[in-house]
Image (cartoon, rainbow, N blue to C red; front, side):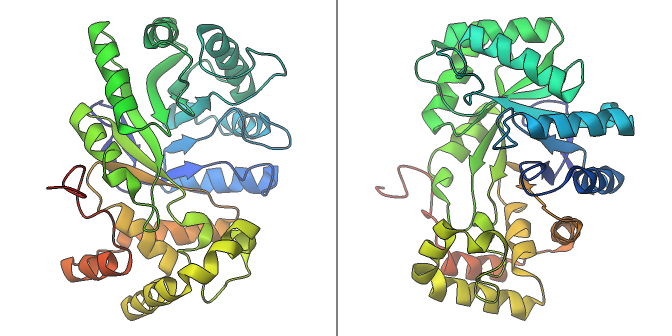
Length: 321
């Protein structure tokens, strides 16, 4: 396993992040336990979940993770990340990141996860209705109480990261240490401002949907299998077929699985702590781990950019001068 520091912190995390969103809805509890056992045994110590995961039973995924933590006895080995923001109760303060919503949500997550503390507590989305001072006061109280150790964000724009970090700095708070953003070869928007902002503030970037719902994991060869069969991916596939055909040809030349190469590409990106892998099966976990052994040459990276051109630079050079 390869390790790095999470942003500017001293926290050591694996470069592959185990996403648990499938635990419950798509993967049974025994199979989820087996995947977590295998992940931690192979050195993957960074587990990501959220209070909303488990649909149609929000909170179910945290409960599965919590039961595994108790059964395995390996809580201290795990860097445990969860999220707050989503609707968890049918009343006005049942969602968001107001001080009241945060207090209620963190206590509920701690119960479901059966733990005394959360390593990384992430805001699942920007909440424009909440003043930054209120947010940081609530988070700082949780840190002081020992209920969380670090604060992260998810789905923040670059200027949201700057806002959050500057207000935290004025309050002498640690502030954000991570940002979880959608990032893949097909979705490279964060290269414009999110990645530069994160790097400037020492915020580690965790990428979600690095395989773009399976489209980058062999959609041409297996267009009707797994998540690729979802309607939204089927709707996108015709317009992407030529591009994905070139991608899979390149991966064939490398002798590697397309999904593994897509993850390996993530590991080359400046500022990226690691991609989230969300295995439904043990076979998918085994495949994802192969990405750590893939080394992409400069020529290969250039060919990948030709197939999936990103913005070309950060803003404003990407569109101005």
